[in-house]
Image (cartoon, rainbow, N blue to C red; front, side):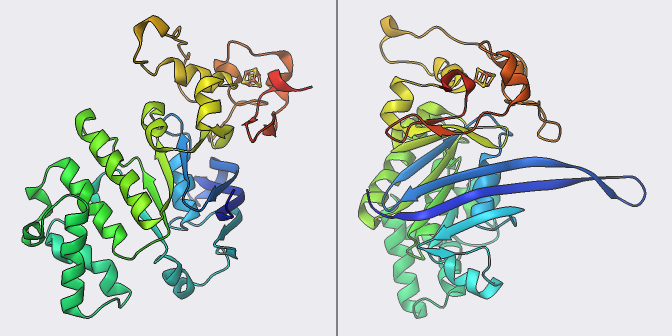
Length: 323
Ligand code: SF4
């Protein structure tokens, strides 16, 4: 396998809970609680889990858009948590983010041309005429047209706006893009078009993706490997085949049971998860999934299972697989 472009060790992001007149810290929301992962050149790692599991916070902490509480982040072999703001700015040429809601992330008062050109301008890339040419090329590349350059975001559909967001990220010729639920807000028919576009662009530009989604059927389409997150931690990590054909963690099994299969005669029994995701401010003891797990044993209530490799890189954090 190629070298890791991104390597994250023991990443944590705790948000303080403040209370009282003096706003004293009375606890922490452990949004990301000891996440380690690697993403190799040209690979897509999918990150899935219910809303509130910490997957988007993981993505933003990796980019240092929110400052992590602890952990190491290596990008292209360089530790980036110790970099200054200016040094980070240079790194952002290589690391980009595509947002879930392109409408919220695109300034409605700017034309598409200035929106796509803006990151290039900030990084002093190209003379004005060349920048304009690049914008037109990018628009064509993401399936829009040069004549769209003079229009404003509200004149586009959700799918087209996401294409504009992708063109904006591509302008800097990044190596790595975090796609944070990029198709969740789109109609199902449009979702596959945008996913196909992301796959094509990956081939053409040798991109590496961290693809965040709450839907296992969406990440299957695009990912090489998939990490399943629950309450701030990765509970299972595997290549796509292993995860979909032999899910090990009871949480992954429940998520997968909800994914429709094309052949109705192969329908899986649906596993209904009881209750909501517990609060990360007050996570359950032991295995944090235990209040919702039908396979819960005594040990699960007191001891947190470590993420262990059961062979071939298929990792799981569950006492069912302890020797
Ligand atoms: Fe269920 Fe126990 Fe495994 Fe947690 S460790 S997923 S509670 S069996």
